[in-house]
Every structure is written in C-alpha cells, then in structure tokens.
Length: 195
Image 1: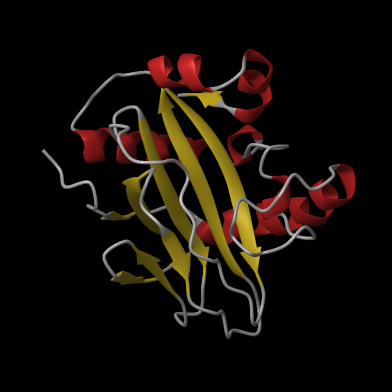
Image 2: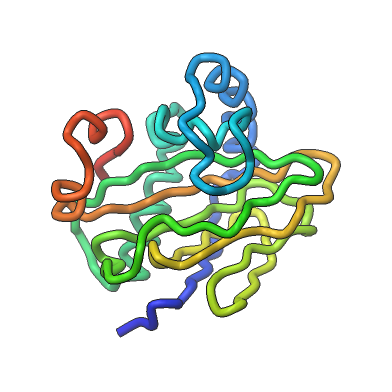
C-alpha cells in the first residue's frame, strides 16, 4: 500500500508544443466568456484561466485525446487498477513572470487514491520552477512530466522567473462511487469527462 504522501512522476511522450498552442488559443476566449469562480486557493487571481476551472474541461477540446489516454494510464499505474471507469475534471494554469501557485489542496485526508487522485502535467516551463508537496518534497518541473498525488496533499510552486509562460494541465480523477456521492448532478456533465 502506498504512503499517503507518495508522489509519482511519469515521463510522458505527449506533444507539449501542441497542447501549449491549444491552451494559449483558448485562454483569452475562456476568460472573456466565463466569469471567475475563484482561483481554487492558488493565488493566481480572478483574472486567470485558473479562476474559470469550473467552466471548462480541457479533455473536451479537440486535440487532447492523447492527454486523456495518459491520464487514464497514470491513474491505473498509480493505483495498480485496470479497466475501471474514471471521471476527470481537467483545467489549465498559465503563469507569467513573477507568478506562483500558493500552497493549497483539493480535499481533506481519508479519501483513497483509487476514489480521488490529483495530477499535474507540465506542458511548458523553462526549467526555473519546481513543484512542492507535503513533507517538503520538491520536484523540478520538466516539459511532459506528469506528477500524480493524493487529494489531501498540499502543493505549490516557486515564483516563475521566465519571460514566456509556464503552462500546466491539472486534473482531479474521481471513481464513479466518489463522483455520485460528492458532486451535484448538474455539475457532472460539464465539469467531468468519463474515461
């Protein structure tokens, strides 16, 4: 059985350049179309793409099919489970020079990772940022890395010092049982994608 603080880093072969282009194209459109919901405790503010995380799902965008496969594979590898339906809420963070993600978590402890697992795919970074997790674990960010962690784990980044964008795709993976008990019916269709 895993420690509640295990972080698994998977090296993906995803086309991060293509994902970067899709996200940057959608960023302005989403910010203009949807009001902010709150930035999820990230500190990125109400003018960020992150503050619309409840209004879109990256997995519903054309060109993200391989991302869906990578998330499903990551869930199965982390939990040593195969062929189980999962439901994924997936959004993007775009950070610019001087921004960082403040310490936050997605849920309180006690939820098994087979029912609720979180992850981050590093899409674009210049190598100047790291992700930090509970117990002072630091992981250097590299394009294409997928970090998987349990929902109670507090996570953050250091300040981004690059001159372009730092882009990540973030996701919450729910089992069907957890989804039914934790998410109101009206949010399931537009927030989650079944894999």
